[in-house]
Length: 251
Image (cartoon, rainbow, N blue to C red; front, side, top):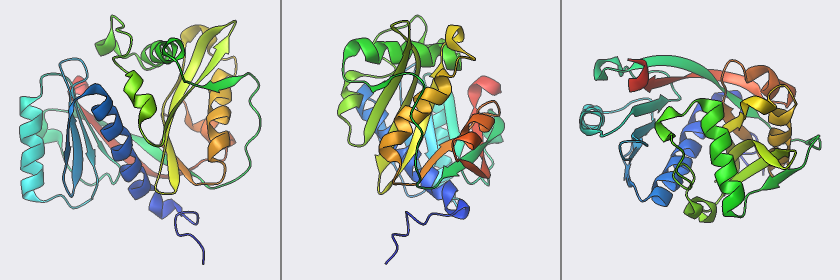
C-alpha cells in the first residue's frame, strides 16, 4: 500500500507545513525554556522580550475561544508578535498586526545533486554560533542583536528529535545555514540564509542541497520568500498555496 505521506499532493502542503512548523517551534521553545501552548487549532510559544510570541495556526476553522486566547496571548506578549496561517483564512488584523503572503512549496521525494561546497551538519558550539550569526544577518533579525551565542539556536535544539542544522563555509567561515525538521514521515526547511558577503556565490543553493540529501526519500515543504522561489524551483519545489504571515513589526 502506498504511504499517503510519500504520495503527498500540493493540496496537502498547507497542513503538512502547519504540522511541521508546530514541531519546529515547539522544539525551539523547549530548547529556549519558553512556554509551549498546544490547542486544537494552534500552537504558541511564549518567549521573552527578544524572542517574542510565535503562533502557528494548525486548522483553518479556529473557534471563538481559540481566537480569544490568541488575542489574550498577543496582548500579554513581552516582545514582538509573529503568527503564521498556512491556510490563509483567519483574519488577525484586529490584533494590530500587518500581514504579507509567501508561498508554501512542496518537493516530492527524488534524487539530490551534490553541493558545490562542503556542507556539514552542526554538532558543536562554534558551528552553532556561526549558523546563528548567518541567520541573524540574512534575515535582519535585529531583535537578536547584539548577538548572544546560544540564544537563537540553543545547544539543546541539537538534541531535539528530527531537528538538524547545516552550515556551509567560505574560506573557513560560516557563510550559509539552514534548519531542517523531519517528523511523521516528511520534513521542512527553516531559516535558509547566507551572509551578505557570501551572496551570489551559490552558498544558498549549496546549503539547500547539502541539507536535502538526507531527506531525498521523503516529501519536503518550506515557505519561500519571493527572492527564494527561483532557487527552490530549480531544486524541485513547486508552489502550492500562499501562507499568510502576521507580525507586530509590520503594524
